[in-house]
Length: 152
Image 1 (tube, rainbow, N blue to C red):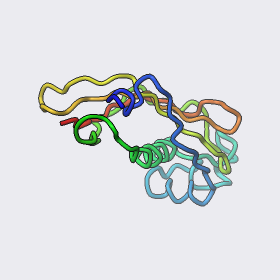
Image 2: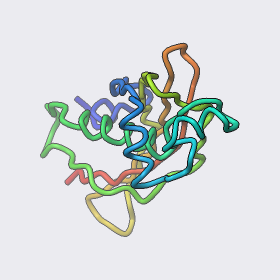
Image 3: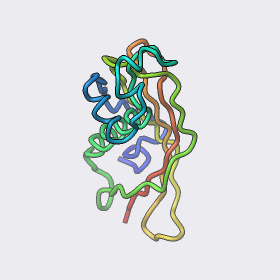
Image 4: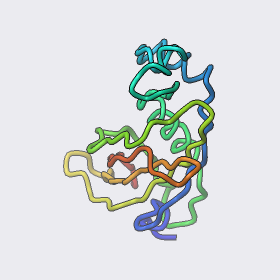
């Protein structure tokens, strides 16, 4: 196995799906994004969305949970197993369509590339493109991100 294969460079990986239930939407929103269309079904019906929908941050957090769960792949390449580190950030985050209560979103990530990190010998920086699709196949979220990977 090469490092590119392990990291999924050029490959879209389905991370899994998450169902956004009304109670969980409201609970998340009360803690982190307390806007009425995320916390109150009546207010949501009278909003631009017309119904209770998940915070974009909630959809992003669901992607992260599934992404981290997918990192346990076996390594049969040379040397020690690569170790994922922190992320220095993301770009171009787009919440493209509301995620309404009861909707299931399937999340993916595609490894774009990786390069040595000059300031940290033995580490590389990997870039990803990530997406989420609702049950009709419509894209509801997309973003590009980076993650540090220790390879030696």
